[in-house]
Image (tube, rainbow, N blue to C red; front, side):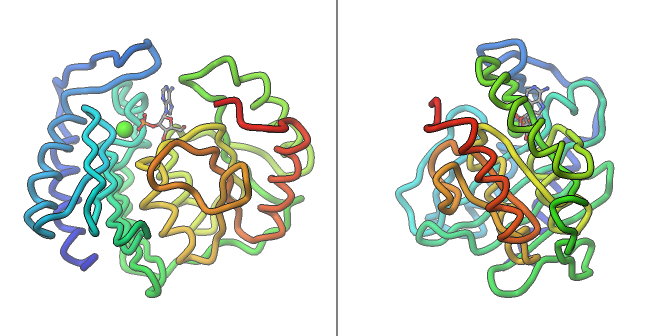
Length: 259
Ligand code: 2AM
Ligand code: CA
């Protein structure tokens, strides 16, 4: 199946690579959508529903949500829209196919980085056709990717405390601005630790499968698997021991989720 999704995702990404798009705000000045997000999503919904007739969709833009199907596509037409709108090239198209509530295939494509990540459940994870694997770095040598809850700045102080504690026990941190790309970088062994206060399923559905097929692990605030139907704290690591350390640090700052 994944080999039939890849050309559709690549063609969709072609709609991103253009100048002269419109930028609109969605409720707040941090939350942007561009005419390219809408064009990519429209294209993907048309082509993916033809690929799997009767499938449903959970998409970022326009509240496009129709989950009452065995097969559901979880789509972020552009992950990293704030980057895209500024001409920063760390952004990607993210498409996951779920069956009965489980991801079965995931494709993440970044046209400017020219990186194609994909996975099919049970078949491993690949970057540009080559198998990828998470790193074996210990926590003390880990590279963290994390963010400060851009849309909900009331959580930023808690985030900064968590990030500080992880940072002091690891190597360094990065913030690329695209959760899907960051989780794929972990799958490829380049980063090792991950913390985001609040992400949506379309940010991590495809990359989460790619990460687990590459040997990585992820969970929410409760230590359980990430929800594919609603927002979640998103923790991930190259191995279970490092994920448990992140979870312990999070729980030392928060008794419960604030949303
Ligand atoms: P998005 O572009 O699909 O909205 C987590 O960091 C997520 O927040 C990213 O995957 C990205 O998703 C969004 N994001 C990143 N940087 C941002 C910024 N400066 N402002 C708003 N949203 C941002
Ligand atoms: Ca998006």
